[in-house]
Image 1 (cartoon, rainbow, N blue to C red):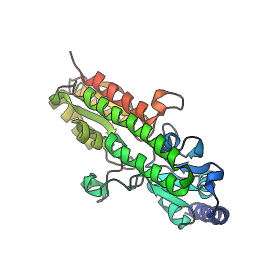
Image 2 (image 1 turned 30 degrees about the vertical axis):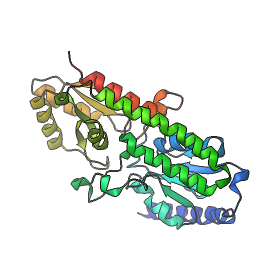
Image 3 (image 1 turned 90 degrees about the vertical axis):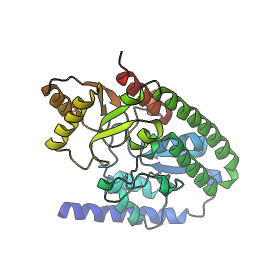
Image 4 (image 1 turned 180 degrees about the vertical axis):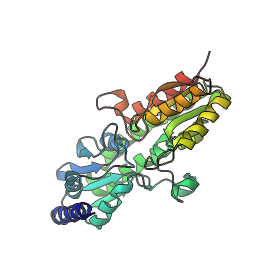
Length: 312
């Protein structure tokens, strides 16, 4: 308890000091230098780099394999955010443990939720998620295009002299995402409708399921902060055996032991389900790989799912 209070106090002190410096830059002409941007998850980092190009200097807080539901800001993270010109985050309670840091910023640093342009009426509201929205909107590529528009408009507002740069970059990236959306739909239709059942470690793929015609089951809930129990494992194993599901999937940001437990429970029932591969859910792949970009991550996921679910 004492250690936690000291940590919050230190974080507050860092914010006050660094935000004081930021306040002095509030009226700076950003057209004369790159905009200093901090992002939370990699999918947002990818948008900012694509739209901002050479006009931005981006620091991503959460790298490959990092679970944003459980992520706690380090002292270095707090300083980076406080010294940024803008912080882009997902919102919808994805980065739940950063909420207090954002609150302490108190408007001294510009913070923007990239999901703000998405119509709330179109969002999923799982009853088990305490009345909040499902935050995993990037799995519907059309929704993520709205996040691109949010980043574009924010950068234009901050640096209007380079509006044409941001407009052109965003237009190019949005065209890539339009093609990506068509690709995912086409790949999904290769799997017969009755075989389109996606089972993963946690309930991150519900927007994907709705957009591309998959029934989705996750062992854990919407947030990985919720632990799966023995009863959850047994119930999912029963479902797999009853439906004769050929494959289930691990996630790069969630330990594989829970899915392996499901596989063992299925085997104990006399049925064999394979682990069809690793999907990227709350984090992208390593930098420099195709999966280290948002389009590459999405293509990897749909190719892995389709390849594992298609049966001879």
